[in-house]
Image 1 (tube, rainbow, N blue to C red):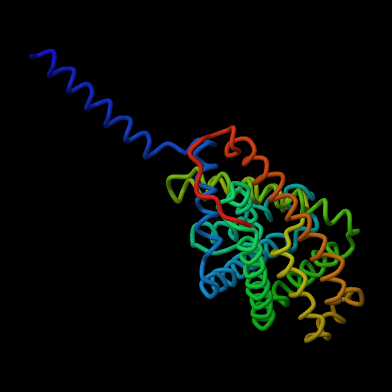
Image 2 (image 1 turned 60 degrees about the horizontal axis):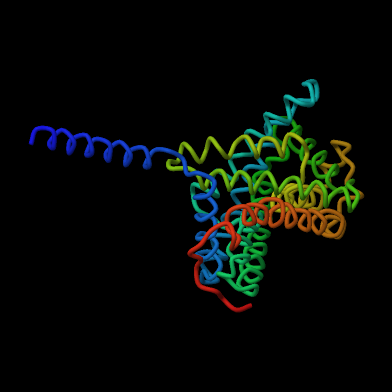
Length: 306
């Protein structure tokens, strides 16, 4: 009787320990893949108004990260290139932290919906609909934030050094070749989706923040290209050039090659294509193949016709 009681107590202690560990420990990659698929199933059919509103928020959040990164880079001309870029990347992480923790819909992160699509749990139309609404909302949110930052006169901050830094960032983006921009976009969204992927393992807000910062810092520091971030960086400079030509002339900033057509055709289009490749193929597609393809698991969800 005594031994039976000891065994019962030991079993209860073990059960409590396992429960506590499961609550605290991060999810394993297999569990992360299942969670990513379920998130995709929930995101794809979201009602368009809510989806659009959350997308506008995400565009604004990423733009705020861009403002922070520009501030960090301003006045660092005498600082070594690498450390200054790492600092800018670390503070730019604010954007994705706000998206993931605060709740918003980001086009580049939503590329992971492809995992639910590959499992035939959402239709092709649902994926295209989601991406189209979110991309449009991200654009509006980022451009409106750029306009607000312009109206606030932020380009004149620090004696104009903020504006000069913003012009340098935008010019570098428009100087890229088409294939180069695709490649940089591919590498960028591989890291962004890896940040989202790692956040799926998290149990707490602190976990999410900690896993987001390194991949985002890496893509910004290395100079990879993010389509939604560019919806802030380049339009902000275009607005300054259009509505404050006196500042541009006084600062001696090159503005003749900065146009909306150049932005859309030479940067946004190839970078978006690269982002799609990096997110859907290099992260979502590969992890689906490893953990979610028919031979990798059983007990699949319902099939949706395409």
